[in-house]
Each structure stands twice: as structure tokens, then as C-alpha cells.
Length: 132
Image 1 (cartoon, helix red, strand yellow):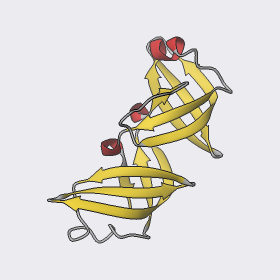
Image 2 (spheres, rainbow, N blue to C red):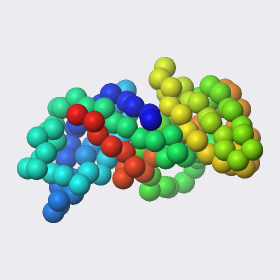
Image 3 (cartoon, helix red, strand yellow):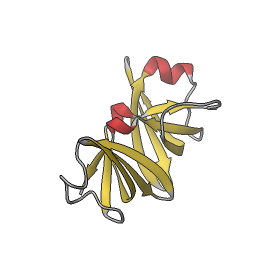
């Protein structure tokens, strides 16, 4: 499980769902939670939390251009590529922290991923959890 220390910077709620904006290591992240500040005491601006996301939820983009709906973008450099028959484990250096991505080996080969490559890790907001 990938973990980053973060601070809640904004909360937008509607019904029983909130879009939580966070700042982690100088970057903006978003998370969708099925709670509101009225139902969850940890949802408050300025609160320090950890954001968590599975390795299998981190997509890799190389030479990304154009618009994309994914808001969680992790600019990183590839530290390590371990390829198996079906899956590849990509270790990213994100501001001195390790973020791990598990993608198909076909995708790793198609992108020609190598240590030292600059990439962007992408995670959908609904795949990010908050640990208070």
C-alpha cells in the first residue's frame, strides 16, 4: 500500500459524499469519501492525515500531453523495473519517497519503461483513501 502524509485543504460535500482536496509534499491530491464533515470528525481543513492507494491503482504515463480527467498526478522518476511474465512492478522516486505501481508487463514493454525515465503516476480520486 502506498502512503503519503498530507493535509486537508478543502472539502466539498453533497449528500453523503465529499470531495476532499489535500496537499502532500507540495502537490495537490483529491479523494472521494462517503462521509461529510457532519458525519466524520476527521474531515476538517488543516487536519493532518495519510492518503493511501494500492499499487495496482497507480497508472503510469510517459510523455503525457493533452487533457485527462485524473486529478492525482505524481511526477516521479523510475527507480526500478521488475518484470514478471504478466505483471511488472515499477518503483517510482517521488520527492525522495517510494511509490510503487503494478502494471502489466505488456504495458511496461510498450512504454519502454527504464530506470531514470521521468513519468507521471496517475490515481483516480475514488481510489484514494484517507487514514486519520
